[in-house]
Length: 105
Image 1 (cartoon, one colour):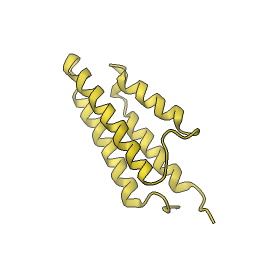
Image 2: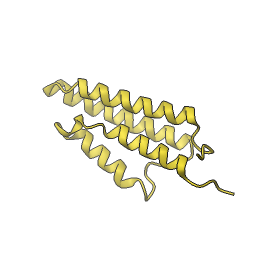
Image 3: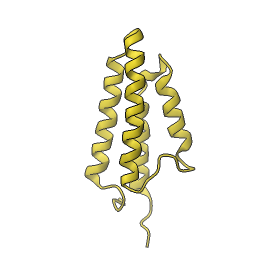
Image 4: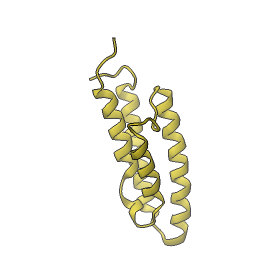
């Protein structure tokens, strides 16, 4: 496991925050109030995860991750579809991909 960029603690913390974000958004699926709050939560989550990954010198907007990030943003603003844990999938996939990346010499 290559933890050179993202440490085990940092990766686990980001995954836990993604799970908490998705649980919170699922619980707030109230018709009008939930739509506004979930949109705000998604914006804050996108900025927070973007900053967290850039701290670890990893980009969510790289050519290999831009479709996953864009799909997450679109999925989070569609009212019924936002119940799917998009943030958890994106963050866990990114962290695990970075851990599995071969070590650089």
